[in-house]
Each structure stands twice: as C-alpha cells, then as structure tokens.
Image (cartoon, rainbow, N blue to C red; front, side, top):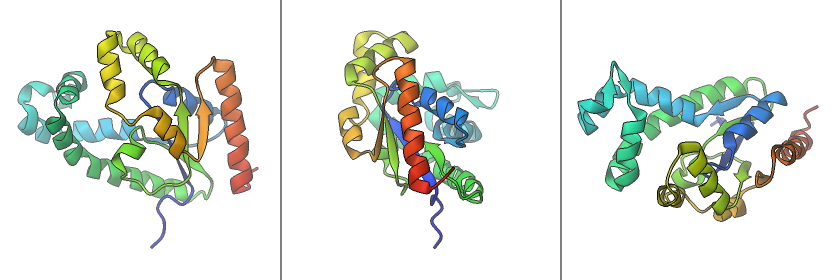
Length: 201
C-alpha cells in the first residue's frame, strides 16, 4: 500500500504556541500547507444536521454550526467532546488524506498542520515539528487573544498534552518563546534542515 503521507511533515504544538504564524512564515518559503482546523470547520458545517440532532437546534444557524457556542459546551463536558470527536475525526481524516494525495503528486515536502497530532494518534506521519512556547507563555497569550480569565486559559491549556512532552516527542522544534525576528530565524533554520533531509533546492 502506498503511504498517503510520504512527503508530509506534521506540524503541531500547543494552544497559543504560534502554529498559525509559523505556517504563514513557511508559506513564504514556498511550502504548501494543509490546515486540519480549516478542514475541521468545513466538516463541522457539512455535519450540521448531525450536530443539531446530537446537541440541539440552537447550535445551528442557517446551515452553519455556531462554533463558539458548541465550543463552550464541549470544553466543559468530556463526554460531549468525545461524542463530537467520534463524529468528526473520521471525516476530517478522510478529507486530509484526499488533500495529501494531491500534494504527493509534486513529490516535495509539504506541511499538515494538526493541532492535536499527539493526542488523537490518528495520523502516521513522520517527521513531526513542534512549535514550542512554555506553558506560562501559552496561558498569557491565550488570555490576551481570547480575552479569557486566567483560570479558563489554564483549563484550556491543561486539556491538551503538556507542551514539554510534545517537545520531547518532536523530530524538530521551532522555538516561539521570543520575538518575531527570533521566530523567523527558527523557521529559516527548520527550512534548511528540511531541504537537506529531502535534498530539495
């Protein structure tokens, strides 16, 4: 069987570690990005009827799922979160595999941005790059970005695998604990490593 992710690099990290910024920088270096969150949003909206049945009609407006309202519910209820994951994850994986097949035709490395790569264990992709920022920084950034109180930000960070553990499991680490200039250098360093590894000019 042909590996559907032969040229794929999984990019992951923790909440508010700066994965989107890194992906934007990688695009500037010519990398194609498959964004699992974007795919998840498409799958979620396509599954609106099932969502209305499972969680209630109030979570759907004009054939679109109210992600913010649904998010609040599943963040606080692990059983509902698991039910939602059970519904969505197979469809998300199918869509990502389809997109990966298109990328594989070019026979060059591309990025699949999967926030919960280690938690879900759904994808057999190697290597893995982790965008890293220490936990305290994650909490501060999340509070600022989502205007959350400290306790709620801590709770959301705690729902994911600890960032230090992800760092330990990574093949590559992009350190985003400093400023943008430092991050740009980290991304450049990573790009050079990938070019060497895959003999890409």
